[in-house]
Image (cartoon, rainbow, N blue to C red; front, side, top):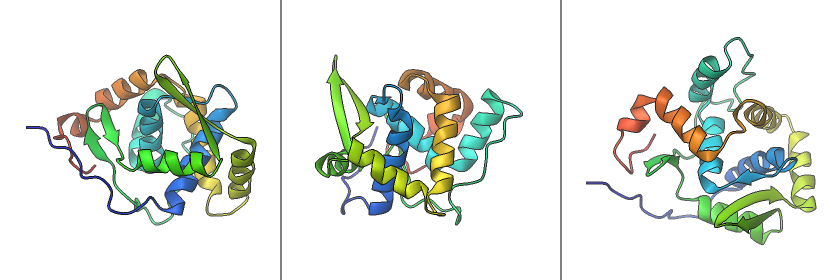
Length: 175
């Protein structure tokens, strides 16, 4: 029987907000990130460098995947297996916090939310890229835009085809 994840017991951290802001900003140059499914899959590949490297090797063999953006190799908060693959229950509060601070602007068309940074959000994201600790995260987000700027469904399918452990995991399982 499928289980659902419990709601977060504390608000998402400033680091989680910064990571998501950088990801959204990198994709804001075009149309933004269309839909929470696409956002979740891109964030999954950003947060899990080993999975990113495996998918890069399948999708773009021979392309340098760059350095691991997480110096410690640990993930601040693991994602869970949910209906359409990797998911973080804090997305709603993360997106709400970034919207409330005026850093991102969700646009809704045909029941799909598209996330873009505001001019202020872009300035904050740019300032983050100037720091040694956030630059590799930005660089990885750029690689994601270059090689994985696909629809949310296509990303989900790539993840399902490549990572059987995620497909086989029960809903609510931490990845």
